[in-house]
Image 1 (cartoon, rainbow, N blue to C red):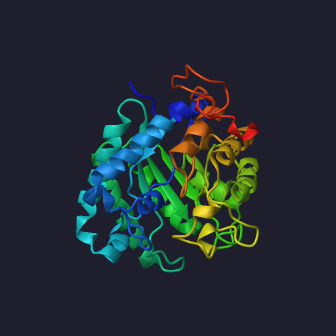
Image 2: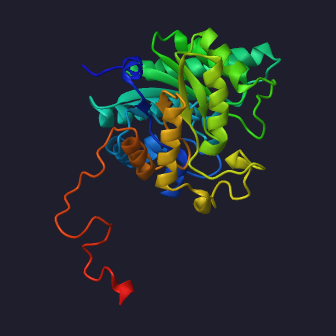
Image 3: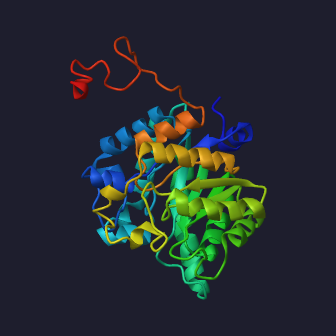
Length: 326
């Protein structure tokens, strides 16, 4: 029987997957701007292939591509009436690829309806979350990930609704230009509030690079003893612009900012050494990143492909290797 997320975490570090929407946009299947997950309906084979890449790279978890698959966000591309179809298709694709190897996470994200001082908006957000969860749970997800919440208040609503499913719940925050939420809450305060609300796993995802995420994760680690997750973007951000969406290159000129596979491996090592339990990545992270992270974390051997000819260095079997010495 397949081990669940909490059982895997109890045994050691869990490796998440990488980014979906920006990668699928790069491949031509998603429109830049709204970044909505209609690819689950329009080009399901493209989504299937990306899941396969992450699975083969060593991911323990595959997330259903239901980020921004809430009614309010889907309305921006005229798909608000396909909400159930899209959420159902995304979970089925992830489950088909996962098989008995990976656990499948349903996914909720920030909405565009939350207003901190408007209780009516809170009820609207609850309804949005419930709509997605009803479909995802019926399709057999293994646990729930709620992610990319700027407002702690909205993240707490996500915990509230997700806990009603009876499944394990992971909810993570994102921090924009400042290391505080719009309500003025620090990473440590967010971690404590989310754990107190019942989240099994909490942490940080998206917006910031590993360099600008790990110090905030350290604050969370000091604040709580619960399982922590870190899923940064695989882009190089700066002290002036720690949020990658604030870079002038966002969203379609980010290629020069993408971190190397070696840099992402170093991030995985640092996160493990800092006591992070769930180590993954977000926008910009592709299979080669996840593969090197898996090797650092001991989930994949150094090399699995046959190598019969040549020396240890890459390309040493190439006919003209060493021509620079002539």
